[in-house]
Image 1 (cartoon, one colour):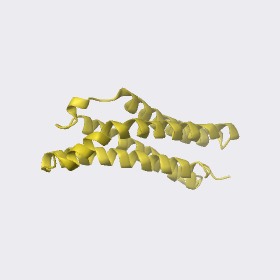
Image 2 (image 1 turned 90 degrees about the vertical axis):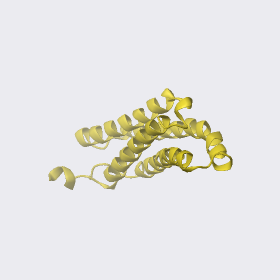
Image 3 (image 1 turned 120 degrees about the vertical axis):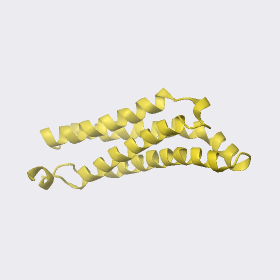
Amino acid sequence: MSFIKKQSTGFYITVLTVILAAVSLISYLINCNTEYFTASGVNAGIVILLAAGIILEAVYIAVSNKMGQKEYFDIIPVLCGVVIILAFVLYLPERVSSIATIMSFEKNAQTISDLSSAIVAMAACLLAAIFNITGSFFRIVKK
């Protein structure tokens, strides 16, 4: 119970960032295995960047709780934000032409279903980046 009492707003925002990044990673992997996007394959860069973002945020939470809020730990959310944004930047152009093709020429129930996991992955990745930026302004542990 004392663990919860000493947590600040930044802790909850950072945990939400980890959850959103994990949702993005899982949705991306699901999307890569759908019938329409199987030919595109899995981009290892996106997977590595999202996994690195999740790990960095988890390390930031653990280190802040263990050693307290130190100024030199402030680089971790910045690095995590860069990593998540890079994952989004890699993912977006990979799917834009497919989204346009599906919406214009190949719109049916199967392709829309395949497209939905791509949109969920992109939205979750973008929200993870936004929550990461927001969370970096708050402390993890109360003083």
